[in-house]
Length: 315
Image 1: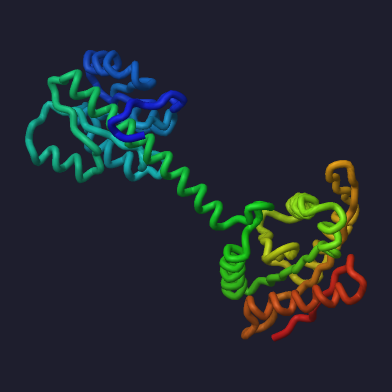
Image 2: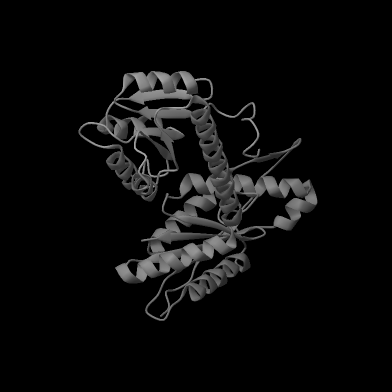
């Protein structure tokens, strides 16, 4: 949609908040704008601040000259409030002084409407701002989706390797500053290739999705789960010593072994092997922590799989 196009069908009906101490002006603006948006109004500045938070309008039309608190002050306070800071507002004023207009624009106003109000001008300027706000919101959502895609594994929706490593480094720094423990679990699905070979490639995808669901059920909100590659996952456990990590891993291992995975007309189970390491003394790094947990994982594999192996803390 371009700025010259009408709003598309299916676009949510936007909201406008009119702030003016003149009921006559409010009625005039409401009559002009009610076809293009849902109109709310208040008659004083302080009420405008709370109403803006309540209805989250796409645009605020703000009278400059009001008793008790001016439109300029309301605009300044809207910008200072994180809840309303991104709501655009335009000033309605009978003043024609260029300095007044400059003051309003410095406060963050997107436009000015001069009194006496010219209906065609008001409609054109308001419609433009509504379109801009809609397109800005769509762009924000698109950017958020791109950020999500950049940080998440597309199959399981857990953190991908890059984002997991960023969070691991942040947790490492926090652990060092606060002198709190940090443990890491490396988890690998046993005989994953056989699952794909026996039941088909989609069965492997379903297996990983089911495994993640179990992990999400067991882990705390502060724990960090990432897919490192293929069927291998890493779990970061902040403020958790080795014995606590072992308890978590055993609980995971048993729950995963109990699940039955359905694929087409087939049912099968899985097991996992896990390795655990705890952050050691000064000189130990995230790289060392992951290497030791990975070594412990392969020890669990060598010992017959479906087991948890612990690496001793190293300095």
